[in-house]
Image 1 (cartoon, rainbow, N blue to C red):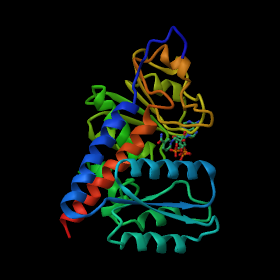
Image 2: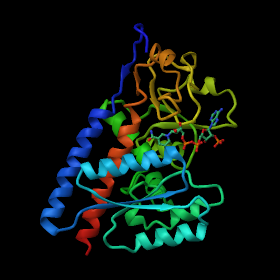
Image 3: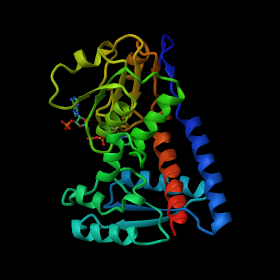
Length: 286
Ligand code: NAP
């Protein structure tokens, strides 16, 4: 960012650290009281280096929070049936409390079928239709981690949501769609936009809150924004570049998440928090 920036950065790092610290306290309490250590199973299919890095990061953070992890790595040529069988096995394993299937999976796999093989009680990444329905209805349940993290960040920075106009750029099942659902459940007026949307800048200009989840570096430009808009950059592209043009946007927005250090840490923090939630619920139901 340049010296003439005006937007206040919405830092996720500290808030995420607090969330992880609280999850660690709860994990220890559960283990002390019941002998059960919360355990997250990560499933990685194929050898995409970025996905492998994300999974490793999630395992390392779990360890630091006193959460156990089980790592399943499957070859790139894994079939849908084989992946479903593995996820079903983990869903039935009483020592596993949460399951994360790293997205994206190789092309030959039916990702929706794979996600649906995750037991709803262990869907700590919020990817099943069950969790999506809970988000859509505004009911309690596991949140998709990145959208759930975004909402926590907005709340922590006291961004008024009720009645605000939120424009979500992107409609992926793990990010854009649930982000819009959670904003709607918080009484925002939500406009979804995607690759077929016409005149995107005109829609973005109406937004009090912009969520950029596009997967294109520097995509959202400063001149698209209404002055004072709150901008959430959920994107992560090679070289620590987000989906918004940070330098331009910072001159117009009131709040802007940095990349890195904005949305990213919140995603992992919510994953760990929800893994402890799952372990507590499953232990109470034993
Ligand atoms: P995705 O599955 O590729 O979805 C991208 C979305 O952007 C799609 O809905 C697509 O529309 C839309 N889009 C593409 N071109 C567009 C255009 N010209 N105008 C408007 N919309 C357009 O990506 P994703 O998984 O949601 O990820 C989005 C970004 O978030 C990426 O940068 C990714 O790295 C990042 N991400 C970050 C985290 C984190 O923890 N921080 C987690 C996940 C993802 P269609 O539906 O019409 O194709």
